[in-house]
Amino acid sequence: MRLIDRLEKYGKSDFYGFHMPGHKRREELGITLFPNPFSVDITEIDGFDNLHHPEGILKEFMEQASDIYGADQTYYLVNGSTGGILAAVSSAVPEGKKLLMARNSHKSAYHAAMLNRIDTEYLYPEIIENCGIQGGIEPEKLRRILEADKENTIGAVFLTSPTYEGIVSDVKRLAEIAHEKGIPLIVDEAHGAHFPFYDGEGENRQDGRMFPRPALQCGADIVIQSVHKTLPSLTQTAVLHLQGELADRERLEFYLRIYQSSSPSYVMMASIENCIEYMAGEGKKRLEQLGEHLESWMEAAGKWRCLAMLDDQVLEKNGAFDRDISKLAVGITSLGKQAGINGTALAQEVRQRFHLEPEMCCDRYVLYMTSLMDSKESLLKLLDGLTRIDEELYQRVSKRSDKTDSMEKAERTETPETPEGARERCRDGQSVLTWTSHMTGCMSMAEAVKKKGRWIRLEDASGWVSRSFLTVYPPGVPAVVPGEMISREVSELLLKNAELGLTVEGLDAEGRIDVVEREEKE
Image 1: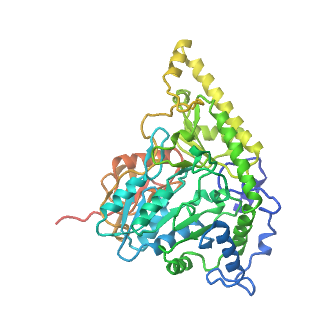
Image 2: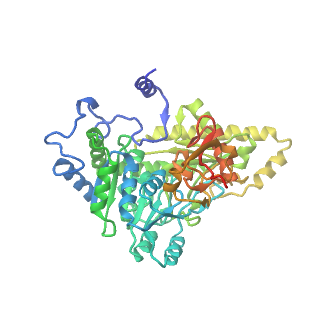
């Protein structure tokens, strides 16, 4: 079966996607309804401008977009946020300076550092251990690193906010701290493209705000957003915003011409324009309606006993300043574990029984991504399916109990994490690689990839220096980068991810990875 045939068959099925892209495969007049793409697929002909040297219609539309976002300049990206991140990092770090980057950054930020031979120093995110996810970046941690940089070797700061699971750092404070040193802050806000279109009051959810403030409003100098991830736009579409004087606009535009296709798709650019125009108007109301539906959804999910939601209780600790409620991270409680289920099994059961597809799953949780294109009915279908499974799991645990009082004792030993009754997540140690560890760097990324390599099995790789990126996908955060020594813990966790069915980029079909060949001693 050809790819297009399989896509068409899937499109006609009753499977529903709680995953990217944000348009959710829905055709709606004025939002996602397009003519035959072949009929409007053109190249740079008279009257249609050139993305790499915009002087006409594209220049006008990008200027309109910058007004909507409040940026000094907004750029269309047709190579996704990846192209924007590559250009941002390449342009923002002066010659001879280092990039201070969050260790949970997308692989494209590492690629930019490697290609430009930029030395990197890492900011490690806090860990929400009972959920098995990364938290945010603590502002004081950034301050300590910058104050210790007496030689002013750091040229730019790069971080990801929100994270894949929706955790938002205090970007306002982080920007202020970076700016005190005259350093630009780059924010990968790929998963927060909807943030700018919520007009509610409050600083964060603790103050009653429904969606987080966008990084641009918080003072970031360069912000990259994937409009396709959470908004109604075609896959691979994104935008980059620039503001202030700390980032070099001329250099940024130079690198955008390098990392973007020389034949940009006009269909994609029309999709970006259509999306932004809609979101600046009717889309705002629809986004607010989504938030209201999700708050009711979370209230109902708080009654689960074997399943539990990532909720606002994670805020104000672990670097989590705010949280994106559109990301539904469903964890497994200790009761759920007693019932014999984990995240991958839960995702499979929901998929088979209710035809609902998640964004990702791992041992400890399942991630369902929502957008303003999700109907109230689709959200209720997901809630109903998960609630039914939760009830069945609870009954399974009850039947296994020899006595009623032993069941009550099991419940009493679980510490409620919220007044609404969300239970404590499993605390049996890190069973999957959901965050990055402090790694031992032996050489630069650029140096490692040019060394002679050798392929060895991952289980035998402890103590070897990686020659490649080892990345669990999604979300695409490298666990190991070239030049770092592989520890036994990391190799075991990567193998565990592979066994769960997740993609481990850098691992071949025979379970081998590329490492730096050791030099023989004379």
